[in-house]
Amino acid sequence: MRQKEITDLLRAHGMRVTPQRVWVYGYLCEHPEHPSAERVYSALSNKGMNITRATVYNVLQALSEGGLIAELKTEGRHTRYDARLPLHGHFTCSKCGRVYDFAVEKLDVSGLDGFETLLKNVYFSGVCNKCNNK
Image 1 (cartoon, one colour):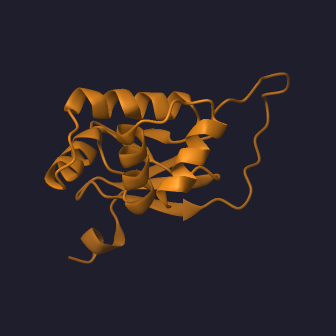
Image 2: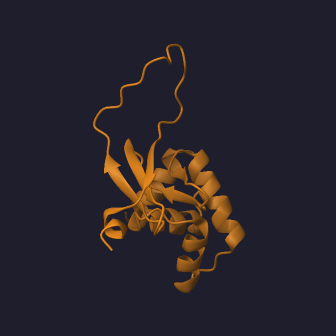
Image 3: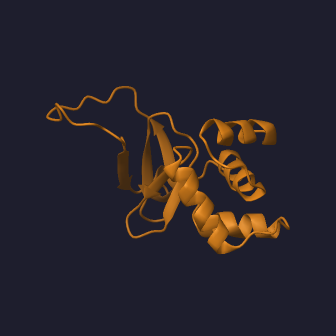
């Protein structure tokens, strides 16, 4: 996603545009492997961008609260982040820790009449095919 598109998206969500928000969101869009905050910080710092760990955490929180990214909480691991928001599922490999996306065609749920759904999360864990075939 280009910088102008990110800037427009941030403004459309009522967010103040800062270089750090553009960098973090851009990184998440370009790296769909569901990076942790530490991974985002390390990658941006290594590119020579002037950003602190605290700023990365604050930006991720703001983007999440603004509805631009999703937080993934996996078993015993760091929170990971996803800029892909359309409904899809996540599979976390318990051996290598990689998070895989998978399509969710239809999500039928019953027993929530009258509830207001704010988040839909489809999550599986186990051993991925790469680790299973080693």
